[in-house]
Length: 260
Image 1 (cartoon, helix red, strand yellow):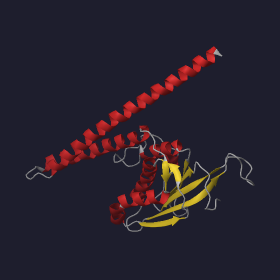
Image 2 (cartoon, one colour):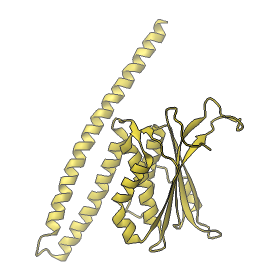
Image 3 (cartoon, one colour):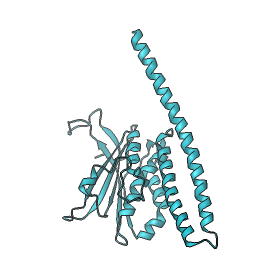
Image 4 (spheres, helix red, strand yellow):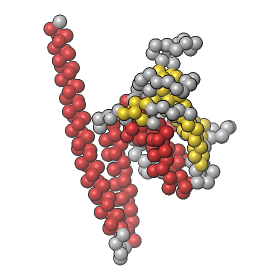
């Protein structure tokens, strides 16, 4: 009994120490992100100066590109270590906020957005984390979509995730929640890359990506006790494209929508 009490005390101390490290890391990353943003603003002002030589502008462009990547890494890392703020969240509101943020890119690429919103409840979640999940997936879809003929379908529906083997009845450990499906008509993901897309630092964007977006997406979804799955076709035998399916549990008993 005494040994068990000592082990429990050590475990609680380790958890406390990890929490302190997480808070310290979040503070450091936040300050670094602010400093990087200040440098980015200074480079923007410098780029607008008259009389700069073309070679100098090239150097500034290179610096701004690398700095943008560093800011993105800081922002994504901060999203992982910061403390969650769980509140009632309307999924369609978060999605519309993300689509508004990318409205310029959507118009530039000529991508058609098709919405199917069949879930109208709230879920208990961290709105900032959910927004980051949707932003990462939507941005990937927009970047892969073909110009002028691109299409992104977003389908929100109530969903019953069955965690047992008896599919004929609702088991005690089944989870009611919402499923958000993002389907694009881009070139798809090659077979050899599908197992790697959720790995940290893996990217097919040839230096333009951080390789953290989908890895962070999976981590944030798991923090909400949800799942994210991928389907993709790129073999040319049928229409190409990629489909991400995100499941987020309700975390409470609610009624009003039909679960399937």
